[in-house]
Amino acid sequence: MNCIITIEMGTNAVRIFAFKTDGTLIGSSKGHYPTFHDEQDYSEQDPEQMFITMLFVLKNLLIEKIHPQKYRVDSICFSASMHSLLAVDKNGVPIGNAITWADNRGKKEATELKNSDLGKEIYRLTGTPLHPMSPLVKIAWIKNNLPDRFKKTWKFLSIKSYVIQQLTGQYVIDQSIASATGLFNIHDLQWEQKSLDYAGINKDKLPDLCEVFFSDLKLRKEYLNTLKLDPNTQIIVGSSDGCMATLGAGIWDGNKATITIEDSGALRVLSNKPIHDENQRLFNYVLTSQHIISGGPTNNGGLIFDWFNTQFGDLKTGFNTDLSAEGLIEEAAEVAAGSNGAIFLPYLLGERAPIWNPNARGVYFGLNIRHQRKHLIRATIEGILYGIYNIGKSMEAHRTIDSLSLNGSFATIPFCAQMISDIFNKPVGIISERNSVGKGAFLLSAINMGIYNNIDEAARSVTLPVDYKPNKQNHKTYSQYFKIFERLSVKLEDEFEAISALQQENEL
Image (cartoon, rainbow, N blue to C red):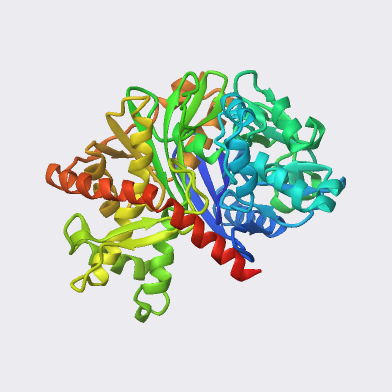
């Protein structure tokens, strides 16, 4: 029996799935790694810890599920979160930690570039909004603030490129991850010289570009031995988590969008060409030369609910955070839509689309003496989902959206799924495989194996039932409160900047 393994290097966890070649799930496993916020606006991870965690989880899955049942692993396909940056020396040894998408230290560089004519041209050429998340901005920040690290760097990698290099010895980056760097021209599918010049590097400082199907890679002998894999096991470079989630979410036909909410979140649509937004609110990332994933990301997804749960959840459950979260959801369900006037701006990590403000902060607004914890719980969830709806409104300036596909552990909670349907006033479907990133990576592998003839045929194999339909009255209520949410997000911009500056001053 043959099988396909997919490895997703997510923001706070590695998720590994094993599929039969017909798409049936054999098993899955997950391992966590921490994120460090040692200074204001910093968000870093230890790349070696991430690699070791991935290796440990993969080996356990093989030992527990694959080898005992005599499965032969045909291929291993990778996906990863976007916008990470890791500097390595000529021996491939990391110079410092990996910088994640949530890092905001490059605010000055991002603001100056965004407001320049060069910035507008770079956005048009690369499709990546100019924000501290962008590896382009991260490299510029390192050049300006850590000149010794900049000089010592032999290559700048994504975390996926680092993991693949550790396993195979080759430095490669797929066009999908590359298209989220701000350094890659999405029109001619090459590194963009204007971006390279701004960053102060040449293309030799970056991994070799390849398509998402690239599989001319072999595991090093030591990993073949420790994992007990066949030397002919294909290692497929794969894509970004966003593109894989879109491929695996069944939105290929019609005016559909997919919403992913795990730690962070995003709304995405499929296009055959980039969507150019004059206000630079939306991204355009490459899956293939004929398939562009357009949309907007939010920093503040399930992580924000986890924060609330950690700070204010019921610790009488013995620190079982999952059980505590279930209890919070049950409390929130006791409250009517709109949380009796309590509104939450969920910007604990700044925000990306559509306001693109790294200084944004979290706010509870409209509180009065009658509000209880259950109102704050529901307001917190509504605030997270208002942020996603705000992205959807930006997208609908360019594209009609008739229905939604949900994936990710937070979005697919039934309470949240119904709320999304009500807020958007659109029918919502959830595929049977709740993790569409893993499903997308399986489909990519299946195409490589000839199970599907092309990417369109593979994508259309995903069935998407309609699981939730909107409540019109709830939608009316949400629409009224969302208008206040939207205005507050803009009106408080000066206060966001002021408190960020004050906080930074006090930490010096």
